[in-house]
Length: 259
Image 1: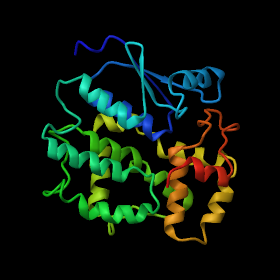
Image 2: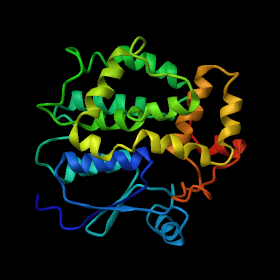
Image 3: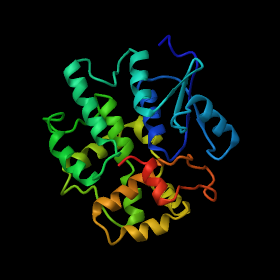
């Protein structure tokens, strides 16, 4: 582990993408400093403009002063720099390609999330032919981390919207995967409290109007709204101050969030 030296991660407590990087660092046993950012401050705006000028959002990983942005890139960087086990990605090139494919597929920049979940429930049986591992003898990897960052706090969105979308009856594999990962100490330690997330949602301006507009539509639209909020894919990053946290208006929103 001679590569550590200086490792700092800038993130936001409710952001699933910062959670990805945090889990990866902990699973790999890397010592690092986590810096919780106030996303409305001048400091973070300057930081993002300087070190992540394209996307202007956290997380940003600094390794020996060098910035790495975008959570998927950060995960692969961590695995390539710290080569000691446990490995995030499989060593076999074919299996590694499969894991990358499903990680990209599960990422919620999609048109119909529920349709993707249906495909994933069947398709991931190729990855888990004997069922989801217990993670008692193995550590979560790249695909596990990406999946959990998106679905690990699904109860918060379900609680706020009053609609369950990840049910054991429809998605037995995905539900068992979430539950197994949620018991891993490195994962449990960094998962945001569900009640805190539920309390956070209503303070986002126009959130209630989005909730109301979602009710008469198909489940796919409801779920898109849920994951738009969870991802925080807004041009201006989430504010740590609930009173000043802002999201763009719907027309601009759809240009910013990939679906």
